[in-house]
Length: 495
Image 1 (cartoon, rainbow, N blue to C red):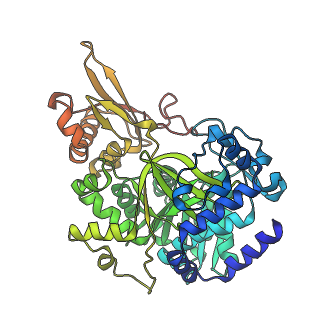
Image 2: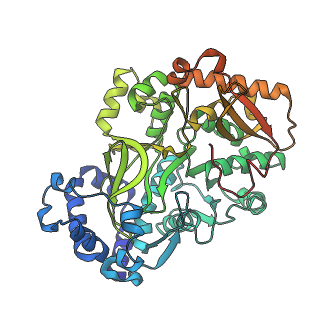
Image 3: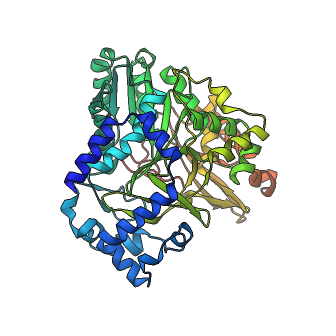
């Protein structure tokens, strides 16, 4: 495994990004998928046992249609069922050189093994962003990793992938303050002036908090040509515009990008200037978004390489297959979403008289690749139902990000359905105020009006199912870091 991994790493370092992506676009991804399946069924003890228990002879899986009949893998029926070493090739945990821990957002934390070749595969997703969006092949770049460090997957994985790009010849220097704002500010003040651009990598709410706190602390972000790489949460295009404005962004298509990642398999897809351009079109045209995506909320929209991570859809949830320290075949990630071919996407947009390629006016001769799209709503844990209308956190977020509200709040909120004295259902929203902001009735009314306007604009169910007298939510204001609703250092829940 080590020798194979070394050869793979050298191949990756020596292969230009454009060559690799062209190969991916031209490859027969279904044939590659069948090869992966047979390799895993022959080398991974846990998967061999899984197939035997389901009475499946791997030799009978000869076509893609056969492949689609395979049972799904989940954390419960596979990852938690078999010993960690049996999930690795040849049952040898030492075939991998690193172990990370999942965030535990859906249960107890889980250990994930990987080898350096897995990181090199994922580093290609970072390379797409750093080269095609940020021109980091031509500019001295400071990459500031603001994800949590330690055993958790995000920080170390991100730092390693950025270092792999440096090893490939990119003028990138990596620094890892993690989610320590004091250290981040020290890095910005002392190191940022030495570079042509600075990339902050972290979770969207934390990066916004860093940027806002930095402004309050006297940091002038627009002096440092700031770029953003984000992962972990869906955010609105209003959020991108708001944060972009505060860092001095001049081009929303090229100054930030989000990764669709998971501890299970690293990065599955990434935003590109093309996908951002398309998503901003849908944000400005909510009727088209509802028609195309089937929901009133706007999903994350990324492009992916089907030879690296192959997506399928079953019952409106995403499945993927991919090679890792723990290889996964038809793995049920529990994210709702869908997949769209490059051709289907452009044809739909043409029917709406929108040409994203013309809109982009591609810079620096970076090409647009005909990779497919995957859209991700995330898990449905935080949806609440109100008079039959599904309300999503994303709908509320847009209301929090309007100009009249965003300076008053952190962006964190908690929504719930409560009953009044007559047992009528009332939508209530607990809102965290920005530091040094004091609660007033005027602020409550401003937030309530903004949220109501955006719910009616974005959510047709809300506009049609909820009687007008119940459409305005009750807003409850809480100080920054309130221990009941918004404790500092605890993963936030929206409902």
